[in-house]
Length: 71
Image (tube, rainbow, N blue to C red; front, top):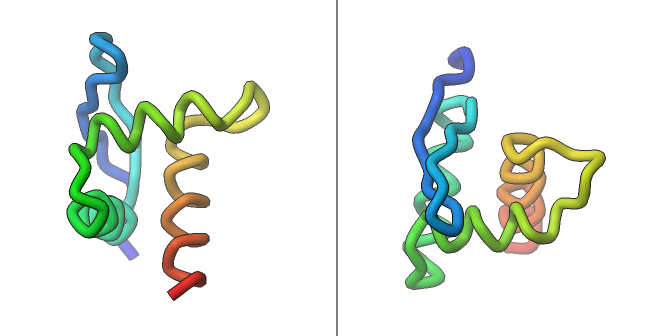
C-alpha cells in the first residue's frame, strides 16, 4: 500500500487538502463518477455529515469502505 498523498479539494468555496492513499482516492473518484457527482460536491456532503470527532480523510475512507461493502 502506498503512503497517503495530499489531494486538493474545494469545499463550499474553500480550498483544502486531504491525505489519502492512492487506492482510496481512486475508489473515491470512481464512486463520485458512478453517482454522477463532482468530487468536490461529494466531499462537501461527507464533510457536512462527519461531525467533529472524525477528520475529513478518515470520513472519506469510511465512506468508501461502506460503499464498497454495500456492493
